[in-house]
Amino acid sequence: MFGLTVRSRSIGGIIAAGLKSVAGGEIGTYVKLNEDARHQALDRMVQNATAMGANAVTMMRFDSTEMGKSMTEIVAYGTAQVLRWPDGEPAP
Image 1 (spheres, rainbow, N blue to C red):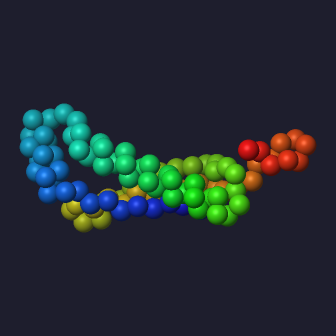
Image 2: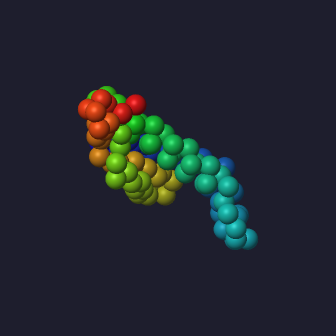
Image 3: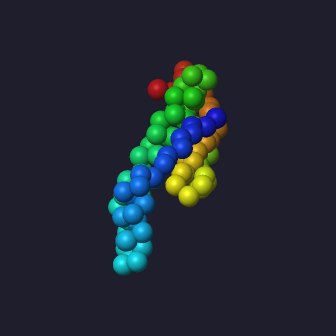
């Protein structure tokens, strides 16, 4: 099961990143963009797992792909499972 999002960089972000790449250092606008995209992909993966009746996700991973010059695909994926306590009751 997975959660997917595709994000585009704004023209302002592209210009700021270009200027920052000349001077060096962290590009804050891209960090924020990637953090937001990862959170959205993770939230979608959890929603997908919940819809499947799972109460846990194991072996979770992120993957990303550049799509053109200004778009990035972020995928969160893992194995949806139903965990149970030793007495057979589902874990919260």
